[in-house]
Image 1 (cartoon, rainbow, N blue to C red):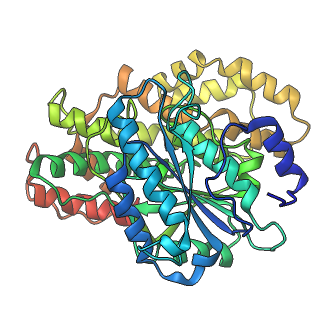
Image 2 (cartoon, rainbow, N blue to C red):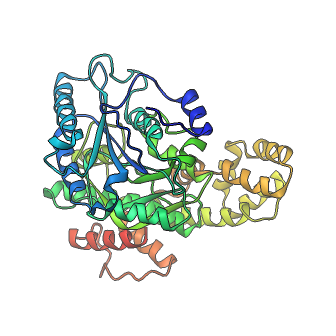
Image 3 (tube, rainbow, N blue to C red):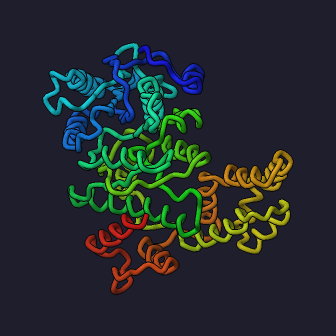
Length: 437
């Protein structure tokens, strides 16, 4: 590839990228959007996803590449490798415009991280590394001469996309000054009865947490779901790219982005993730569905809204432009809630805060350091600490009713407090959450 890259991009690639993998089809064309899709044992789902892309509005097809990273470990089962080989052969065919029987206007390419000598490393191989390989290589294909943003879109192979997916995302970035965001997601609730219950339960859990953060006015009130993440190439390089985690790569990537830019929700379109159980990652959608179906524990529980009220009070105190001493912050925290005080002490707040003050030359730097220290991960740790020490989880629908009331949101779904309402009422809760979180 003869594309001359901006200096900061080249420096990033020299320092952080791998040289082991490359595109199957080296094209001279430059793109403005690259959709990166890790895939392991997803042959049938890849066909469904490609078909959903083929039904998209073609406005931006010419400047968009759909890039699959077909991957496995050397130790992966023969069944996985055979399935991946089918995916590779299928995608190789689609990458040739004349052989693309689905939609020859689509630009499709693949990175083979599956065949012998190209498998992912046994120690670090997983979804994070697969995403990183695709996103790093995509930097070589962007049109840096154009003034508009070059966009990296993350997706998963077991998803479908709405017909306006590409156009909505591209238009949003073209018309708004944003650097990172995510699109809405709608898990399919049309499956067998058990899967329907499981996925409704899990999506309520995801959206309730974000709604609780919104109520608390948290900087981190956004979804961290791998198949919905989007950023421009500049931001990607600034945060030193995707991490190599085998799970939760999406959470940590979005958190890095949130520390340099605002995370924006892009409405008007959606990703349609699978509601299946899965072995692919140790936690997340697939494992939560498995756990629900195995009836391991009561899944109809949520963090108490009281925890988000404590978080809300702490955010008011800590993020105020008034700069206090460590002792003053701890004193105020103890007045809010004793478990909050213990959490800060356990996390060495006083030592860390004194370092922040010592190393900051002006109030703006202090404010920035506040967000860097009390970040999305510490926010989640605080909610977990409150749950484990003082404020246990409560019935899912009691929690929803209480949080809705705190936020003055209309709620006419339950006529009386059943332990678990009917699936029809659960769907009403979910649909409301989809509107507001």
